[in-house]
Image (spheres, helix red, strand yellow):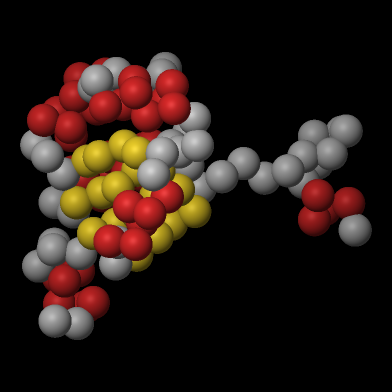
Length: 108
């Protein structure tokens, strides 16, 4: 089955690296749209909180995370190998900032 078909019928699995202020909301949007989502983060405390249905981001309610977990379409993990099961992987990690809070690329 092609990736386009899996996207259309919502059977594609989406991996999102980084479950911070960008990655977690993005994961929840894909999950709400009916996709299975594997949310990866290197911080075990974040993964543990998400796995228990708890949010650590002020504007994302824990009820929203808990519902995504309960539906079985959202899984948080520190296991990088889980991403091998994904059809698409989005990377949402912090941009390195310099001493004046400018992105590294803008200092060229």
